[in-house]
Image (cartoon, rainbow, N blue to C red):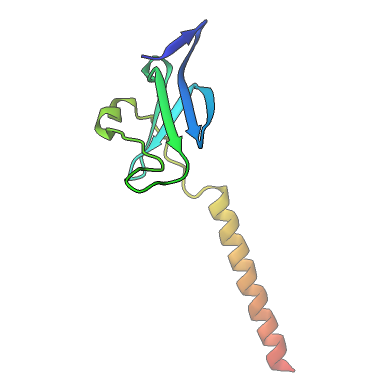
Length: 114
């Protein structure tokens, strides 16, 4: 359950690195699954606390480790709208490619005529 202050929900994030401690509030946690899907935890679905550790590795100890159960996050998947195709970037790349090839052909014809 997320922590609440006024109307905002947040998770307390504590990061420890080589003896230095950093504590922040997280209002949104995004998790990318192996298959590329993006999950987002917001509002009261946030955990109350999250702790991460990093630093120098010692034999038998981990530098950093975050354990997740992705199957428990499927209910929180953010809907993604499919981008229209072709979009402006695709059209611009096509035009630039067409113009570049046309200029190269003209240059080659000029060089061959000399």
